[in-house]
Image 1 (cartoon, rainbow, N blue to C red):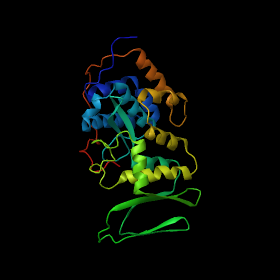
Image 2 (image 1 turned 180 degrees about the horizontal axis):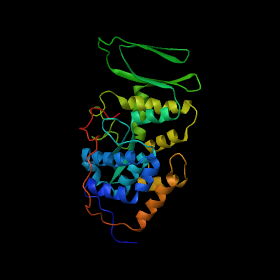
Image 3 (image 1 turned 180 degrees about the vertical axis):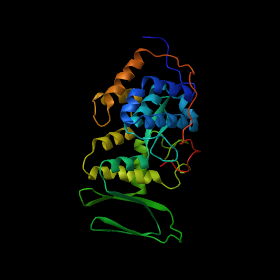
Image 4 (image 1 turned 60 degrees about the horizontal axis):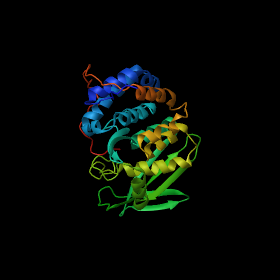
Amino acid sequence: MSDKQILLKSEKDLKVILAGQYMKQINNYFGDEKRALKFLSSVVSAVQRTPKLLECTPESIINSFMIMAQLELMPSGVSGEAYVLPYTVRGIPTAQFQLGYQGLVTLFYRAGVRSIVAEIIFDNDSFAMENGMPIHSYDVFSERGKAKGAYVIIELQAGGKVAKVMSMKDIMGIGKKFSKSFGTDFSPWNDANDPQLWMWKKTVLKQAAKLVPKNETIFKAIDADNEDSIISDRLEPSKVESESLKMGNLLKNAETNKEGYQEVKNETQPTKGDDIWPEAEGRK
């Protein structure tokens, strides 16, 4: 084993690693070279928006972005599909994959859902349940008060609807339990980052996933989003290859990286893609 370790001093170094050792997998995941190249540009943009990621372990950064690639989602502060956030595990700066609300919606539609309606319930709204379905109305020109809950209604492709309603207490309880970044400045749970409460809608939609026909990709994405263990603990169960997420090649390369770490030279300049944006108001 080499005594040199991967050094990620800048977003350029990360791009060199992904474009070199992981490009084949990324192309396979997206099935389109142009989308794969856009993903690399989006990764560069994501690190530029959150430079603190470079303080995290290289393995956790690479693994988090590769999970995103497996799901065919783009890191973006505007689209809100997925994020990689910095946090600390047992004193070690570690990057964490975070599924966004829009990313979860994308996966639901890929799975064949016909429509999704997700709304926040405020104190002054009119809200009731009728035959298991939310009945919700409000005056858009009046003060709606404080948010007190959220709901989602999912119309299935085969017909019929399912609904899930949750209170603020239950939503925040799940956030505290499952989100490693909860309470940090970078967290999408932070009110300053999520003034429109997209994380509330996402949480209710995740719970509603239990009510719809099982889809392997959706549940894999939710499992990754809920992951509580450190990154090294997470690689072991993911060795079970999933056709929908194509984990096999990723793990083989992860093992290769462990056997031969190397210092990355700044051989290429970052490509600025169309999705380099200022930080979004709310991480969806």
